[in-house]
Every structure is written in structure tokens, then in C-alpha cells.
Amino acid sequence: MKHKPVVAALLLFAPLTACGSAQAGDSSTVTVTVGYQSKTINTVTAGTLLRSLGSFEKQLNSLHDGHTYKVDWQDYATGAPITAQMTAGKIDIGSMGDFPLLINAARGKQLGKPTRLVSVTGYNLRGGLNTIVTSPTSKLASLGDLKGKKVSTSVGSAADGTLVRALQRAGIDPDKGIEKLNQQPAVGASALSAGSADALSQFVAWPGLLAYQGKAKALYDGAELDLPTFHGVTAREDFAKQRPTVLEAFLKAQAEATDYLNAHPVDAAESVAKATGLPAEVVYLYNGAHGIATFDPAIKPQLVSALKEDVSVLKAAKLTGDVDVDSFVDDQYVKKALGSDYAGRLALKPSASASEVWPKGASRTRSFKTPAELLAYVSAHKDGIRAAYVPDATTGTLWFADKAVWVADGDELLPFVAPETAQAYVSAHGGARVVTYAEALEQAS
Image (cartoon, rainbow, N blue to C red; front, side, top):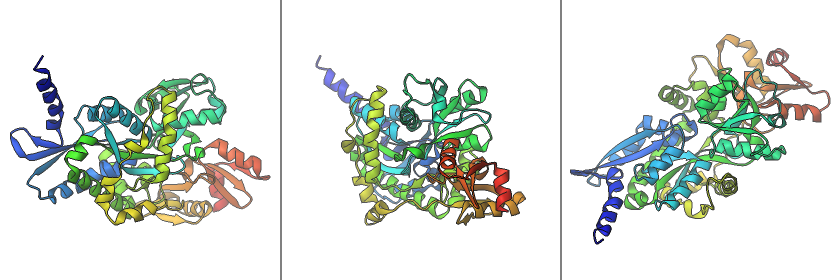
């Protein structure tokens, strides 16, 4: 039995040689393994865009600490496999949504491989990154209509959390009131198209993509919950302690990618589109100058508070037990990486919502003070519009102008993401009425 400590030591050492440390036979080469989700475009500043800019590699090369660094980028569809690889010691740094981050924290603690939330990628303070959609021909018009219906979502995701909370507010038991289909986003999208699912609750960029393709229409805007949702960066605690300068290099690079995205939103959208195969118009809906997501690496207190509120949803679904969020959140590395800039970033607020047009062939978008002004421009340039975006009149969530539900209230034209909120406005404002997009264009012209 004397061999047990030796075996245990070898087992502990094994994962550390796989990533975040020197490769066997070459003590000067260090491979850093980064797990990301290319199509979850709310994480691009820690994944797709960061990779295409080469910022992390440049930061590593500037360390001059006697090591040669290599970055192994591993692309996944969701956060779950990234967590599995992290707890196995095979991924050093990963990015995922808020609910998966909590599962990441819980699994890490459970398996003795603790992880830490070290920065934020994209967020929406109202919850607009998650949307429930139905098929284009569906008669479903409100959350209440989902009772007894088949709804596809990815259990344990932020989109599932939105579904659960939205149903609860509508007075529907999220466990017994619907038939929940636990499916990956692509599978759920296919199920919706095939008619085997009545609705789909998913995260960025699936709802916008399906709406853009004419394969879905919005039923519920997650921003109606008025609860923050976000994606963030998690790192293995042992990796962070072993190579803090490498983690800080990553966070500096993430900040550079964030600044690039904010300064060049159209170029960033085109870059992400090229890397992912997603339409640039969909990427811009979420990541644009007035997009649904706001990008900043600072770990804002309201996001931490939201994370604590999310624990109860995961516990009710028996996906985790208690999660010590305060222990999981560790902002020391991003504070050190960003230095005096951190306080300013922490205080930054999302840009005000605005109507935007992306003209064909243009490298910049045009903003308008009101949706009606945007419609007037679109009406006069029908053949020259690549995409048009308008903010929901109540939540501010950006949506495609031609996919929005429009309400005419006298001379005013108001867009809504979902039919239920549009109808609520009409009911509260005498004389207001729902109009078609064509009618809205005609009135504005």
C-alpha cells in the first residue's frame, strides 16, 4: 500500500503537464489551452474575435520570461464540455454563460478542481440575450399559450433559466405545465422547423439567427424579466496560481479585443461572421454599437448579484447544490491586468438604445433618433438596406425592423420584439393599434 502516495502524486501531476505548463521534452515551451464557443457570440472577446486578432499570442510573446508559448484554441457548442475538460485539467481558461458558470463552479468544487470567474465578456442588464421563439406560422401569441406545449431548451443554460422564470411569472409550473425538451440549440432549431417543438428558448445568437432566416418569430423577450444575464471567463484555480502572468496576459488581450469591438463594431461583426459562418447582420444585432450585448471585462456588482439569484433556479432543477458565488468570483487578476483602467470600466454603463440602418456596401451604420425616422429612411432606400434595427419600445432590446411587431399610436410608430408586449401597449393606449411592417413603412414615408 506504500505505492498509493506515489500514484496519487502522478495522477495530480498528469493534467498539469497537458496544459498551462511546459511540454514534455521541452522545458521552455508552454501550451495554454483555451475553451470557447465560436457561435455563442456574446463571448467573442474571449474567443472568436480574440483569436482572430491574435491579441493573446502577442501578449504572451511580450512576457519575455524564458518560455515559448503556444495557444491551443478548442471550440465547443456549449459550456458543459468546457467545464468537463476544465475539471479534467485539460482546459486552462474557458468562457460560457452565467448558468453554466455556476455549474462550472459547482463541478470544480465537487471534483476538487476549483475554478474562478475572472472576467465578464458580454452582458445585458435586463436579460435580453435570451429569447423564446415560435415558428413563423404559429398561433401562439403569449407565454400563457405555452401551457401544455412542447418547448425546446438546453437545460442548465441561461436560456433555460429565462424560460423557467418567464413561465413562473405567467403562472405556469415550469416542470409540469409544459413538456420540456432538453436539446442542444441546433437540435432545438430543427425541432421547431419540423413541428416537433412548439417553441424554442435559446441564447445568443440562435433567436436572432432563426428570425433573420425567417424560420422563427419572437414570442418572449428575455428583457421583460429585467434581470441581468451575462457570459464570462472562468479559469482553473491551480492554473491561475501557477501562471498568474499568463492569465493576466489573457485578460489584457480580452480588454484589447473589447476595445476593438467597441471602436469597430462593423468590422468586428464581419470578422466574427467570417470565422463562424453566421450572417454578419445577426452578429451585429447582438454585438453592434447599440446591440443587445454590452462588452466589458469588469465584473460588475449587479452581475454578481444576478449570479446569486440564479443559484435557486439551478438548485430547483437539481443541477447544483449551494454555490458560494463570493468565493467563485475572483477579480484580482483582471484588476491587475487592467490597472488604473479597471475603475473606469467598472463604472461604464451600456450605451443608450438607438435605431440603426446598415446600408449595403457601407463600413459604418447610420443611427436615427426615432424608429419612425429609420422607417422613413428605409422607405426611401429600399434597395440599399443591408439590415435595419430598432429597439423595443419598452425593454430597449434591439431587433430586426422587419421582424418587429409594430404599433401605430397617432403619428408615433413603436416597435416591439414580442406580440404580447405590443398588445399590452395597445390595451393601455386608446387609439393605438398593431400594424404590419408595410403599413408602418407607408405611414413613415
